[in-house]
Image (cartoon, rainbow, N blue to C red; front, side, top):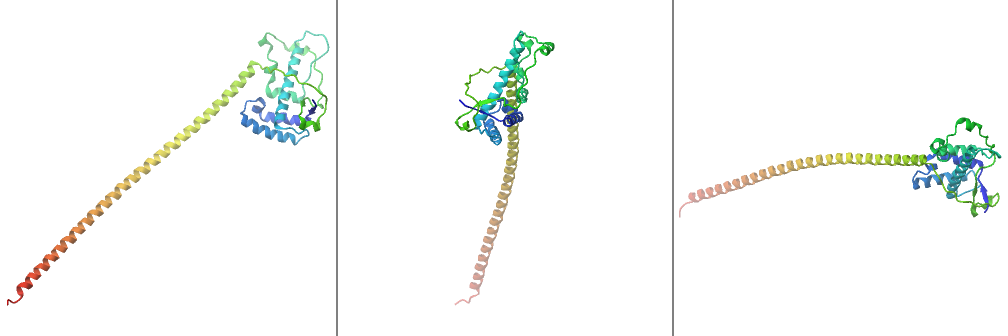
Length: 266
């Protein structure tokens, strides 16, 4: 299978972007957030190409960079623990690898304190150990597998990849669990704050609704009272008119009686 070599500028920019997004680099953010950020990162890295890679390929590039750095740290740790003799096999770290080690805190994962595992390596013993051979900064430190879409930029020779079992120190797992717990705590605190705001708004709405109800109730009572008083006035007016009409009729009857009496008798 052919290989494609990412440019040093792309790899340095990838590490820089991971330093800007430490949660994404350590894989402790949500899938939705990670997918959006990785799309933006892939677009920016492809602008520095060739090679041009898909988002999934750039995710694999970052995973391989972490894996190769951890493997080199494990090999150097084994050389430190060797009894001596033979050629110097220590490997120095490039600037990119040192940045990855600092970002992911791989010292606690790959090279834990010796006393914790029954091994106490003093500073003098470390100073007496042979220095690692200098690394070539001009050569990209990570060669990654490519698909058919990347073969226009393929270089190198055929290799096979062997799966490696990931191992992590318990302190790193505890740190990740603590970070996850803190994130969940912040999320629930935010939810509780939103619920309290909703309750406060609901209480204010209830208070306003009650005030409106009582105002409408009072205004309704006043309106009914006014209508009742108007009805009473109307009834009294009708009664007065009826009495006036009756009085007029009685007066007319009296006049007719008087005229009848004043008529001459035949």
